[in-house]
Length: 103
Image: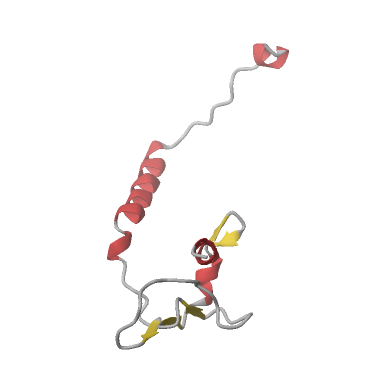
């Protein structure tokens, strides 16, 4: 056992339980009720009359155009907010993870 642990007591912070319980409830609410959030109405899904829903390669139409995603030859999603790319997981936007996993 290291000598400094023999001399000093462990430094465990005193937690205010109520704040952690409240934060946990909010987090659980987000996880459980994500389907009840109002849909962003400005996003437009454009498609043919009888589209194919098979996603072959999700991509942006041009380099640098982030407000539009092409799912396949029949379906395009437009008017995607820039804020969507602010949600980052492991140094990449979450939407980029989804786009690259479909290839």
